[in-house]
Image (cartoon, rainbow, N blue to C red; front, side, top):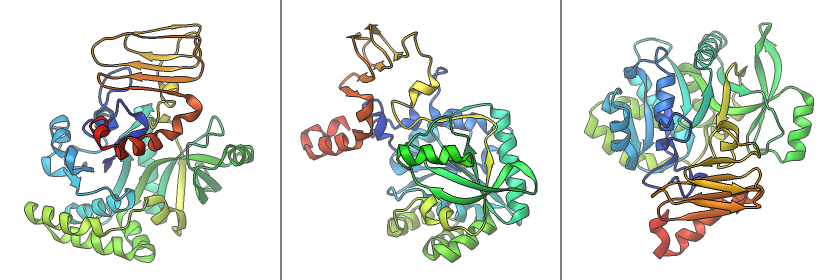
Length: 357
């Protein structure tokens, strides 16, 4: 199941309500992030076993983009309720459709940059095997290369069955400040939380029963509705009643048995403009650019020009983000890029500017 309902506000003004991040081609090959995610799954999950859960406003665009998938496998949420209701919805659909007694769900975000597709699939296969064998929920952990406060962390315990790459999870830590992250990295047993999960359905249902019975009840009702029109009516009536909560808070942090596998592949979360500095080529001064740009004596900047081919030029810039689209210009220091959501709220408060969101 691919989660593709976010708007990607931290990539404004390139990402908009009508053109969310997962529909953008932000890597060198130019393919939308969602399409890249699907292509990586070829040979692992057949189209009929692949679900995309997105916002109802993006369903038709995604069905057009992902035409290999059955149309009914692309499901629109009537409103955003975070990732735990999304997982519960998928659990209901999988329970209804599964042809085995012990189906396993692999849950993926749509906006990751991955290097090493075969290694990724091998990691998923190993997680599926171990999660089923140990009645556990599994996740993929990324070995950190810096004490970043942008990611959640996983503290690893003992290796599972002597395997060095799969460990038991002691705890999850949500986006610690830099000082705490530095201490966690010094301990040597912490990983970034990739947000990629492997859930044996039986184990997931048991955890929902124990921790979030309202999500399990919803999943069971979703499994019982088979007619397409009736299912749409069910979602419209019931989805908005579910709590707004992430799967990490609702299930993973207090689950009884969680394991983590160290990723064998290259990974980045394309969640912000600064993240692009990790996945796109840099010039000799550390600048990442796209479109018609000229920088003089500038360092460690992210500069994007999109639209009518107009030039963006800068002199003596350092650690700056400059983004130009056909109808908006965004400028801020890298250190302030985490405040984009505040900016979105201010734009939204000025009704005449809502067209720019």
